Amino acid sequence: MFGNSVAVGIIEIDGYVAMAAAVEAMFKASDAEFVGSQRSGGITFCGVVRGEISAVEYALEAGVEAARQADANVKTSLLVRPDGDVGSLLSRPGAMRRVFAESANETDAGE
Image (cartoon, rainbow, N blue to C red):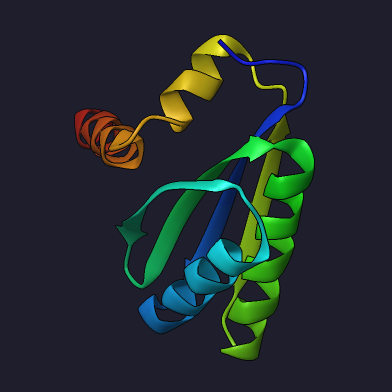
């Protein structure tokens, strides 16, 4: 499913306003496709982009810069040529909702 030049990028930001600014910057900076975002707990939001490696790198860089201008904590991860299972899980619309739902179920079961 994924070619040799495809990447998935993940950005995690504290604050809704900072996330909105980061998403706008990511759209403007590159041709990477924004898959979606999800509140991951408290004030933390997580977003996923996919596309050509360079486009995803530019999108993440722009998102980080915008989030820092909003004085937010930000973390990123770039998955270059992700394994088919990981890449398809993270790059489907609604994927973030499923990942966090499964994570919450595992946490509840462990308590």
